Image (cartoon, rainbow, N blue to C red; front, side):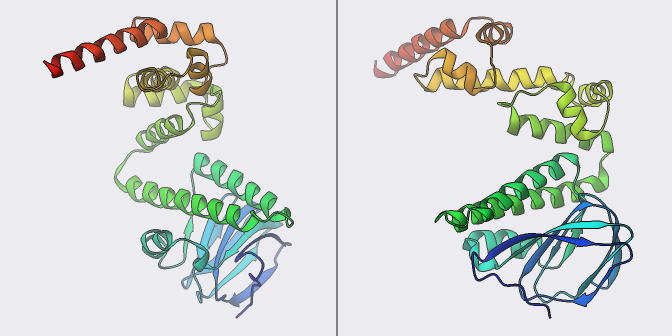
Length: 283
C-alpha cells in the first residue's frame, strides 16, 4: 500500500511525471484516486487488465484496487486523491458507489475532456490558496462537479453501444449548447472542440435536428429570453446580456425573427394576456 496524505483538505491534487519506460509497480491506496493524462502515452493495469493510456484518458481508482502504470514516452498525469467522506451522503451513495463501485478507465469525448481540464485547473488554483478558509469547501464543490461530469461520460459510453457516431456527436453538440448558450459561441468554437470542420459540424447537426447549431443556439437564447420577459421585471438590456448577446440590436433582430414581435411588445402582450386570464378566472 502507498499512503497518500489527505490531512489538509481531504482532497489533494498534484502532477506526476513518468519518463520513458518508467514503471510504477503494482500497488494500492486506502483512498480514491483519479488519474488524468495531461500528455504522453503509456499503459495502466487495472482490475487485472492492461489498458492503453493516451491524452485525456481518465482512470477512477477505488480504494484497495491494485494498479500499476507504465510510460511509453514522457507521461504526465494529474493525480486527484480524495477521501469519499468529504462528499455529501447523496453524492457518495447515489453517484460514487453506483457508478464507480469498481475502478474503471474512461475515454471522455472532446467536450467532456475540455470540461475536465477546466475543473482540474480550478482545483489546482483553489488548492494553492492555502490561506483562504474556503479552500476545502471550494474543492469539495468542484470535486462533486467533476464526478457528475464523469458520470455523464459513463452514460454516454453506454448509450454509444447502439448509436451511430454522428448521432452521438449531434446530441453532444446540443447538450453543450444547452449548457453554454450564454457564452459567445460560434460554429468554429464548437467544431474545434470536436476536432471536426465547421461544415461537417453543420451537416451532422442538421441531419439530426433539421437546423444548424447556430440556429439552435439562437432558438435556445430566445426561449430563455421569453421566459425572463414573462416571469421577471428585468430590463430588456439585462436579459439581452444574460442570454449571451453583446449587441442589443442583434438581440432585437433575433428575437423578432422567432417571436414575430419585439421584446417590449412580447412582454406587453404577455402581461395583457395574463390580466385577461385572471379576470376570466375571477368571473
